[in-house]
Image 1 (cartoon, rainbow over the protein chains, first blue to last red):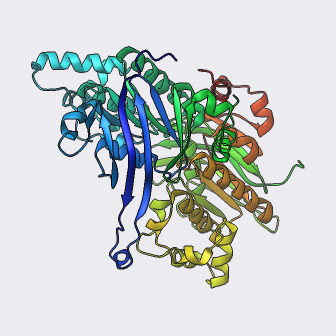
Image 2 (cartoon, rainbow over the protein chains, first blue to last red):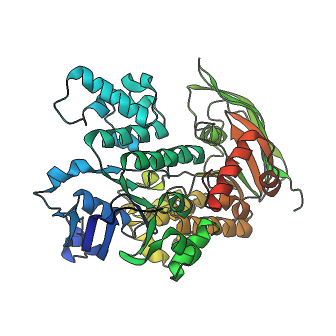
Image 3 (cartoon, chains in turn orange, cyan):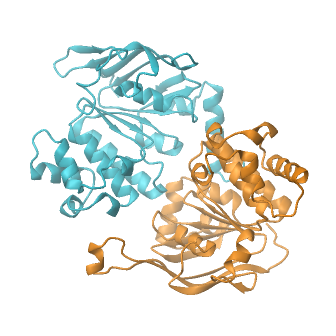
Length: 262
Length: 264
């Protein structure tokens, strides 16, 4: 895919994420585990960058650090030229929105869908306008209008995933971090959600960071792939490069296990 | 493959929620001894309900009809009437083992792994625990025995779950989406391990999965479910090569497109 601007929206420099021992007994002999080890990469505005690798390789830790959910032990993250830290994260977070695997747990079970999405809309809109905006967002993500008054428990997994997407758009997301967004769904629902993401990205000019271990879905959505292993990036390149000419043994293994053809 | 005596046969199984719609209707199938049968189908088609029905885990809200025949080692057949209370107490965990997707939830967070396996063994001896853990692929069983559940990775927890399921020495193992939470490499490893255990011990396996490209290596027979019914069943290879039902066809079409890097 052609990318018109080469403006780097997100820049990660030498990021280090470490986890401290949790239990009391571990503190006697502290073992710090390093989940992300000196990782640097950039995400260009309008592209889809995929992070692939096995469980525990640090993919999600990178996402958590970008979202400000965990404090990095080293390195820095710049979004649109501004360094992300405690002072700036509040202002920038509306633009950086996550979508996780288990959307059900991200929704308040006592809140109707219309309100869940509506609460994300920035203040200042009259009440009547707000409802119209929510319905418009629901239409954008392919949710029928009658779900406005539904509760999360009345919806399927794919629908909840759409609600979370609508909520991210309501806040004004420009950069979406998708952490295994499809892996809990059936293959036919996966295809629907993938199409939705592709279309939304094209319509709204979103930038996506897609975290997944499934190369067969990643290759259809992503422009570039970063392959991670034990906290480090071991390989990076365009989708065609990684799939047809993987350099490292690990990337070869990933391509082989996914059972895909170049 | 030679035709083997089925160890488990399900006759006309119907399951309905009381006063509501039917969840499973007219389920008939047999599990040949020592083979792996995979069940595929979309969410909500009744795969998990079927597994639970075979284990007597559905509870009183459900109306269950039909019967299950379980082959004994001496050649006789025991008939289980799922509608009867306590019909499964003698078989669950002993004749029929179970492993579900979220093993971490089934482990007691307050007991070390070794203790949890010990509690399930009829004659708990240390070498047996070590043997079980080696069987499921741990190279350092002593370390795992001393681990707390929270110290295990997802793949390790799933293998501990497998060891727990095998502790009762079952003839049949029912696994419901055992590897969905694992990444592709750990997943392949898990299925290879399961296959090896089956060859060594002659275990019969019924597994629910939605991973199509694991089927050809992990399963002998395939059952396709749609809206509470079995729409297709047969040898895995022949169903995949010549799918008869439109649902199976569309599923395989999507899978093929994914592998070739096209949008379905």
